[in-house]
Length: 246
Length: 246
Image (tube, rainbow over all chains, first blue to last red):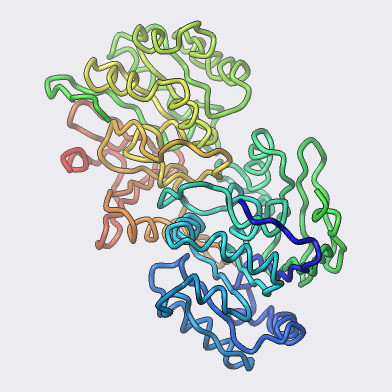
């Protein structure tokens, strides 16, 4: 990562655990908060990055239909002749979920990692991520839940925040008979090899970042894992800005 | 992979979905089949590879205690001054579960991928894997369930069989509220990017390979995924040798 962060710029991030939440239509759980986020940042058109799924057109159509209903235009980066130029001109960048390995590999293959990082960190272009799009916004994809279906040139990601997130965070099943590792056990194994804190975002939760201020929003608590410490629960509305100053 | 496979050698593989199974003590579900496998192959001492977990001594002790109770000696490869020589001299090689990325990276770092492949394919040294140890026995680790906590130099694995396995295979939860991808959805995404068949081995199942013959053993059915085809279920006892001839 060679981008020099100008400390005067204020990054704007909206990092969702997931786009689908039980009991809601697609993206509906975030309608009010995400609409407000776009309006506050004077966004009328969103550049959507569909690289985490195989069918770019269909995925962009799915997300764009919802955003248009809310009053925002949406274009897929894959429909632009020059994706890097499209990123440089975007009012807002929204990276959707799917497979995190496929997503990060495609961002590297198309030379988009540095341009996105530059726009968000140095030019305050609002960023939206859900699931895999939230994974790639963090320090690395080392806490994704996805299957490694392709081999990216690195697990280092956009590093828009200096820690990791585990989206779709899942509590251990009470009385479960499955013997595969629980999510918490997997994150503990991560901390045997890595120092970065991991924020476990349950479905329905979003981390909202405004410059150096980070706030948990949505309907659920979040679980924070730090190397050598007991995991901690934070209520919706909690100020998590301390994670930005690592 | 530079090893030339001598077609006269008969590979011997015992690939377990998991070492822990609901309702059994550690490894107990495999006691009879694994003991018979060792006896048939004249194995009295097993070289255990504990690289998938952080605490090698403790892990080797845990597995060794069970094997000794069954009448087999067990040594950890990490306790040997020269791991490559230890692999060359081993009567049998047993790679335990844990984190698949950590396991494969360590096998590459210590130069053990080619030596293990050579011993198993060209010298019929019996191989035992469970979970991550089963993942690395296959074509690649691209169908592991684990978190990518470290970055291996490749996802290509030992390729002792020409297909992939998904251990701890899990059926979709009926009436579940979690919106993360099901295991089947993840494997379908794998097949959007890769051709290799994927054998979903439920906990309690083992794939037993004798040369070109592959048999499903244990207590559960297995689910086979092939690119562009409907998934198929196979009963315990099924002959899966057709997978060896890809």
